[in-house]
Length: 148
Image (cartoon, rainbow, N blue to C red; front, top):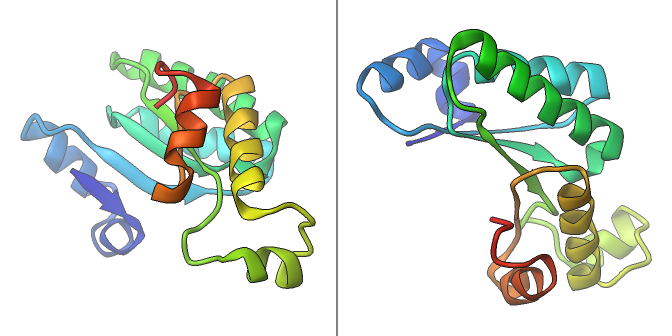
């Protein structure tokens, strides 16, 4: 079950407890993006609820991604749950090539940027990445079948 920002803000973490009590798998799609310590703290706390997947932005950087992975393992272990799979957001699908180039001043083409963010996530030990359907084939070919 996907728990996104609107649902989480409306119901709070009680929705996670409710779904877990119903023996549901939980995709916590809050797209964490902050300094490494804060992202790690959020992943640690979320992992204590037994969520199965957590999203965070790859643009938080390698230090934040690695810290998040370690913290997720700690939080899940403390609560007696399996470690959730951390999934990196490569680029919001609402952004296009023009936004990337002109608004964000990123000199890469969109497919190359998405691939770079996925590789950063993989190098940081994350389980997978979210991308648009246009990038899936390239990410699978480059990152391998084990990378979600």
